[in-house]
Length: 105
Image (cartoon, rainbow, N blue to C red; front, side, top):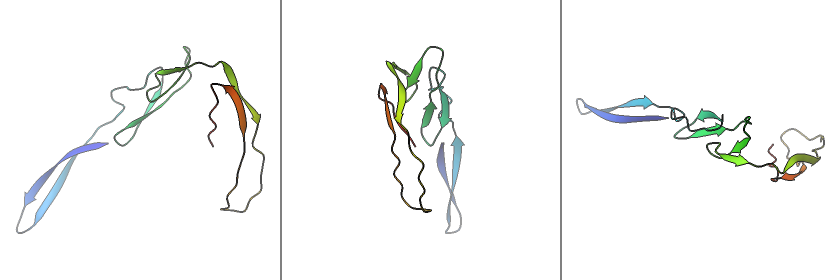
């Protein structure tokens, strides 16, 4: 991310603006907790939460503890499909667990 100041320079009927930029890292303040790894973004950050010896965590800053009552289980996995290049395909997958598992492709 950057911040800056525009400083005008006046010449012969010409206006020129130089933008003085100062880069800063959104992760410098150490926003991620419980061993989460911070990834700097544009005016934001993302915490990659990892399992730690003290438990599982989620949320913007890895501060929300996840209580696993029933471990996640894939009850129906996706099947192989042959499709033409650039065509649409639908893949199905079913899971169970508590809290309900989130499936991402």
